[in-house]
Amino acid sequence: MKSDVKPTRARGRFISFEGGEGAGKSTQARLLAEHLGTLGYPTLLTREPGGSAFAEKIRRFLLEGRVKKYGPVAEALLFYTARLDHLNNLILPNMEKGVWVISDRFLDSSRAYQGAASGVEEGIFDALDRLVVGDNQPELTIIVDLPVEVASARVAERQKNENGEVDRFESEDRQFHERLRAGFLEIAANNANRCVIVDGNQSREKVAALIWQLVVERFGLQALT
Ligand code: T5A
Image 1 (cartoon, rainbow, N blue to C red):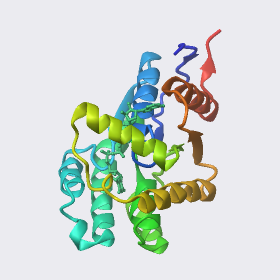
Image 2: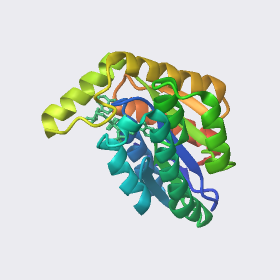
Image 3: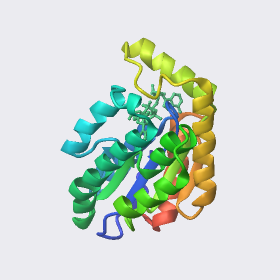
């Protein structure tokens, strides 16, 4: 990718990536963080669940499926417990130091996975968002959208190549993943100022170029002359 912009300000920014399993968000979050880093922006790439030490412990618990038997409300509460630690101990301190924080998943994943796909009612997320996230929502959320069958094929291919294990949510059925995708599209429609949908069904390079354009426009990065 061409380095065609230069840093214009010292304040840290907060960008999140969202989408279903295998949509390509981790790939794109990494590419964006690398691009910003090459241009001299101090950048932190982090993830949810996880990021901070305590949240990483909770991540293991959740992704091993050890909380599933207690139901989606219990899972939602643990995701938000991890989020509180992540926000207070990693995201906010870094933003205060002027670091751009790129998070691979954040609050919208709870509304999509535990809400739209698993049936926890919306009001619970409204309350948890007020309590845990407050005004600290990302300034830009990129939702990478991909048809479920394409995403499943990518995940299967990766598992074959890397001999990877299937985690708690990858093992859910097709209907779950369709509800999830619809959930993310609804979140985007309800939060049009913050969320942008990007078509993930194209090459990594094309998706990355689209996202870069969005970031340049959203944050007014100045083109080099
Ligand atoms: N969760 C999380 C909740 O239920 N509630 C919550 O509140 C939160 C925060 C996290 C799990 O936790 C759930 C959601 C998740 O199930 P995770 O291991 O972090 O688990 O898993 P994911 O975030 O889903 O990450 P994945 O790696 O499965 O999906 P990605 O990040 O969308 O996909 P990515 O980039 O790794 O790409 C998948 C494969 O496709 C290839 C990649 O190389 C990779 O092999 N690929 C492409 N192939 C072709 N064309 C492209 N454009 C490609 N882009 C990537």
